[in-house]
Image (cartoon, rainbow, N blue to C red; front, side):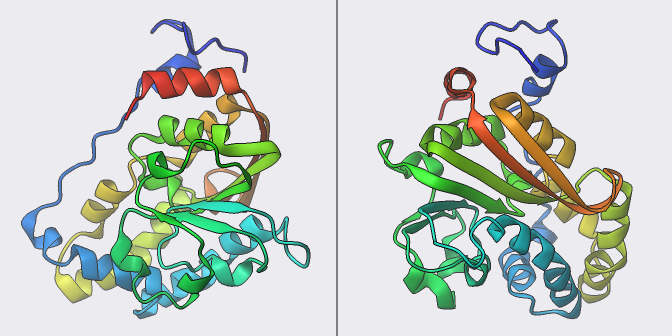
Length: 259
């Protein structure tokens, strides 16, 4: 899609209409949700409940897809966005610098793989501008990011020549994804807490899979997408591999969505 995003106006087509949705506004959490938020988030990422454990087994598809380019080979300098409890690291080979961005630092406190991480950043803006990575990765994180165009643009500018952006995301916005969490984590959450898990999901997942994929296709000249399921709507997860960033687009997005 060839669009000059530095000068595009509000009537210039789907690219501009997509960009005008950002930055997103996260719906506030009611007090009952705030009281259990931190514990619930850590339980989900650590697989501490039956539903969370099932989710983790299914999510292994995402971890394997992200690591497929280095599986059985040589490690490459990597930056992971939204590293959570570092549950991607067991899928990654050792031997190269591995940095992470994770604003919820409590998730890292007891992570067994923490010793393998070179640097931890609470925000992508903290990554030194002169650093370059062969790989920038993300697993189940991009759907949470309210200022996603900025984050993708900064990531594109941190890629080394020939570098690759590899991200796996839930198929947010699709029928099968919604049905899947409603009948597992959502049902368990209601039984345990008497609360609607959909409220938490709307707070957390501010971006749909279609929006994430759309931004990636605008920013990178080469983009490939795989689905875990049958097409876009009947899938649980998507994997996005993107190369050849359009650096002029990245610069325009960074200027448009500043810190």
